[in-house]
Length: 554
Image 1 (cartoon, helix red, strand yellow):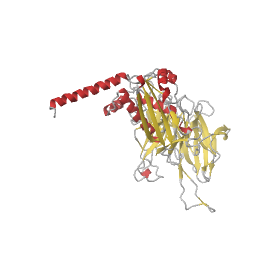
Image 2 (image 1 turned 135 degrees about the vertical axis):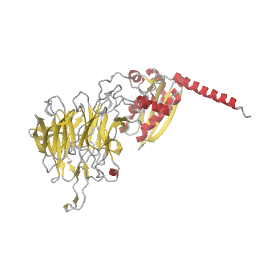
Image 3 (image 1 turned 180 degrees about the vertical axis):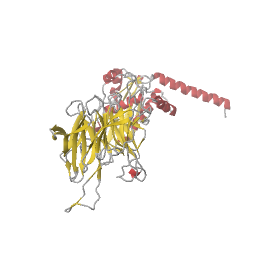
């Protein structure tokens, strides 16, 4: 029998009302939850997942005034369980309405995740997920969405996603773009204000040379930072002013050397930083490094033509800057003797302890990424010869390699070509090792979770020609360890030109930290235009940030 149209309408309305009441009832029942340490089956290198997976799930389940995690002390009382049999007891001990637990099994490059939720009156919810290890984060989000919808009655709609994006407006510098694909929120500046000559960033005048490196530090001990730039034959020192970069001095380098890298470190702890300049002698295929001080507008050579590739790296356990070095090798660029801490001795240097680094590391291509206190171990990040990011445990176990390429240096060291029994060849084309741009570990949000700042060059031509290094655009990315790999937290808007170097310091001496980039202009499609340097800075004014401000998850 066909029902009249008005009857069908009433039935439909009744069904909608019932669904709404059911959703309201579910939401009303929702309360607190505890996510217990997961059981991990697989290689020892994945043991970190027992805490990483719960941490990520807990943040994704949060729904203000509806579903909230118990505090850390209560979660600790829940302890850890080895099977579902102990789940009710753990839930009661934590004082939570829901307990979440599961297992992760790693087999090769694949992961299998079983998740169990135990609620009031023995109610259960289960889900099994299979995925590649690199896609585990996306799988966790699917699990969280399912729990939110099935247990807490939380709608997952496009409008909700748009609302989350809208809530983040003005939390960051407009020139710093939040990665809307990751679930970690950015609270770098919940009440942030930005200053600058265009409202969002500072910009210098054009300088009549292309840069190789940059450093921002107090070089003369007057309590103010200077800007040092390394060009193809000189070191230039400036001070930032309202009129742009004011020149303070410059030093000419030997013409037969190729500049590669510029760093600074206060070796004698006198309040002024020394400049470390690494260069390369192409005739003898050897590094030649210099150490300078800068006082009263003049350079003083402290060490000359040192046979080391030098770099400054923040080292555990205190992550203070340390001078490291490695000798060259005519047949393979870097000596097999490895990377050592360096100690000044008069106008020379001596090696101290050898660093325990993963295979493939050299003095120029690694950084330590601190772990979250009490939860994660520190990681070592390498930039490979193919400019991929690789992450290792302190014991040297490989955890992750990026699909994307980073760095984008234009300075290459030619690997020597030899023919068996004939020595050096003038026929074979030498390949190049491009000197990595720096990687900066930092905790900008002061939340104990460290980010890694890296440069991302953008070029269509570079995809087809490996030695094409005149990148027309660049971005600086902030990456964080999400428990499985390096994920994008935020990035700058596209920067016109190639980033030659970048730093994190107070460039204009106003008490506000800045993300600073030395950018080389593009030489044009035909490569005929003279390249110039522009220094840009993104201020991070944290003065209005309330450390007690709760994360605005909704």
